[in-house]
Image (cartoon, rainbow, N blue to C red; front, top):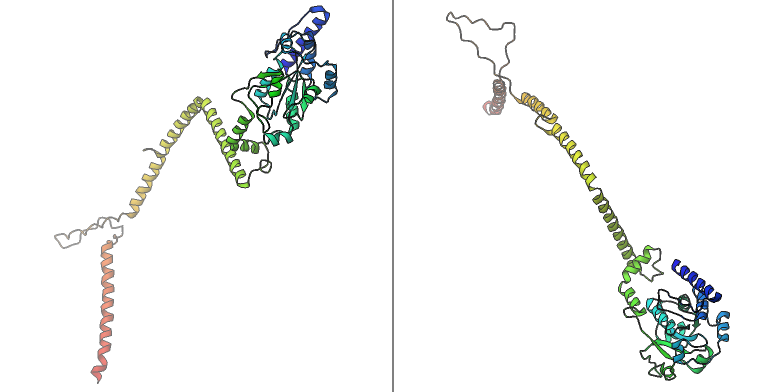
Length: 382
């Protein structure tokens, strides 16, 4: 925008210099367009400050009425010696207006030194019947073309083929188009009549870019564009996407978001890795010291385990056996006990178990003998 404003200001300054007697001037922009006509310099300003008018607008009608129509010969047009601007006409569909379209219009604008460029745009009805469905509507295509800086006038609902009435109505001197023969059902080249009148000027197509190529890219990367538009708030109904595909695309968007977040985290970690390693080294030393204090050979758990193990072994171990009775003295007297004030030690466990067993066995034998005796008594009485 700033480049356009600076260019317009420069052209206005040059125009004021010409009006004050500065002589012939020259416009040099970032395109190859050059003009040596004082009239073209003065008229170039408005076309850069506002969109090009439609052919039925008052500005376009006034420009057409000022033109004294008489077809300008090619030699005069090339030399720039014509008494007025050369009216060049170019037409097309201009769907999804791109740099190939702009470059073609630039060539039409600069084919002669002093050109008034009229651009015809076909309607949806005619285009759909002859070429197929368009992405943009006719109004969108009209607006795209009239905002191109090379265009001076736009003809809406342009015809597919030309006749003398159309040429005279718009006072056309030359028609610019690429030199490839454009065939229809009725003729092999729709520009044959124009070429026969020496009114045809050829432009070059831009290789590698066309509306068909752009549509092919969209179809090829359909999933990507649907996911992008879903993320931007479009509904599945607006995009003509089924319920299952919508869920699939939204899940893929979520996975991409997670991947992006992971990349950001890894980037932040990479930037701060030195600080992280330093802090981790300090923390690891503290953890190792705490671990050794708790689990080391002299740690707290080892001491607790040793104490618990000693108490457990003491509880499970048997008491020592009592000392045996001292042998009788030679005189037959019992020796004096070593410690008369203390009570005699309890018998060992094995001795107590044997005494208990003998007692139980005796009781059992007594009951068995009593039972046998009671069974034999009736037989002896009979």
